[in-house]
Image (tube, rainbow, N blue to C red):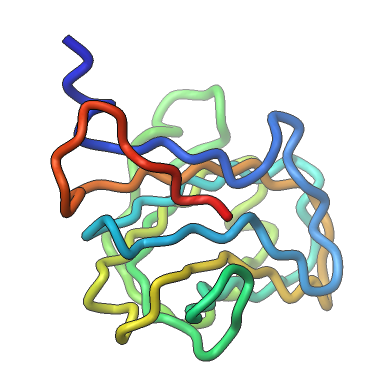
Length: 158
């Protein structure tokens, strides 16, 4: 039985090669109107440089940026592929997280977002301002707490 995938929707927010972070890089938007929670897993490349600001934009439509949501986040304890890369730091919150390269380079970052934090907006978009950094990020979202039980969950992409 595919219990996990009947209760959680796995949504790629980038292609398998990731996206290059440049000025105002947005990942694919996700519709949260049928789900109660989003977990977004970001994997940063070894080429991440500078300081970049990450926000989760919320809006009424795909890619809309009405305001920034406050989200919970945890970063991996070591470089991807090494011991403790899956041991996450303590929970913290932010509405504008500065990604200092020395802290996030070649690590995973997990964002948690409850529908309560969406302030009535249906769409969420991870955004990087890209003003002071570059690098590649690969991301997936896991949407949980579906509002309607279905054997095959509906898409959350536009």
